[in-house]
Image (cartoon, rainbow, N blue to C red; front, side, top):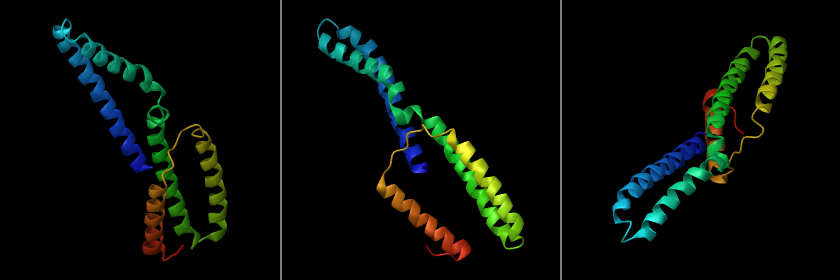
Length: 143
């Protein structure tokens, strides 16, 4: 998810740069309006198209909520990891805490059901590889 958020930030930055460039270029090309009016129309049209359509790009629209989702996911990962450590000492209470944590987890994640997440198999494979290495190093678990 971090790679996806990074990609979205880069796309957003690129679109903002295009708008800034085309806006300043449209003002600068006003001077050549008489000679190259097609160029001026194209520059202004491109800027207006990006400005008008940017709010409707699903992944860019959801970027802020994606960051929230990523932070929430990290928090729950930390909570589950702590619960794993506690379970060795007190399995009975760990089971109760696990059920409560899982219920809270599902309630909070329902809020993010409409967030568009791009599925890229290369990223999923990379995430699985990182997870497996983490589990092997920290818990001697092999998946």
